[in-house]
Image (cartoon, rainbow over all chains, first blue to last red; front, side, top):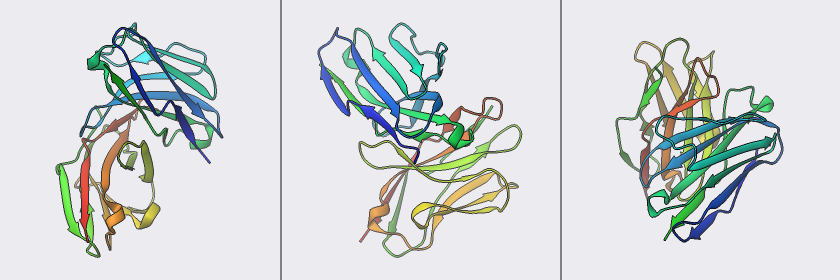
Length: 117
Length: 114
């Protein structure tokens, strides 16, 4: 149990376009989802926390208008990178927690590799 | 503020030898500590956690970790390393105030040689 999926796994886009990444909890209700960004050989940087049905809470330094997060249901959160630029190229990972996890752990998706040309 | 530190960027061991990946923490209140493993181009997989109880925590794939309150450490260990254990390991602490928020260490790359 506690499986989180991400789609797409890899995306290449042109500079200036927008990209949407989906994060789904497949077998549990995720009351909270997290979006992380990981640069090569570095740790995960928390970008934002989203609770189902409410606005996301962004970490300091993360542009809200750049990285749009929606958590419309207990099984789906989306991250949209708007007007993407090459510096947005990164590995984006989502995670989810919910009733099944007793708020003790997060379950991570496999990640999405974004390359902006 | 909550934080974890992983002092080693890389750990190299020979297959069959014991391994240790170090983690120290700084928290206000009771620590909730976790270890995750990441394989190339993949998300993080949960290994084990310490919430309360026995200081020695056993987890997935034969890994265990020892919680040491006096040394504020939570080192990851395995008695006999496998080549397939080669990966990136992250220690994490859960925010005591915001239970959903995790803070991750910088990661330690484990290299197990045949």
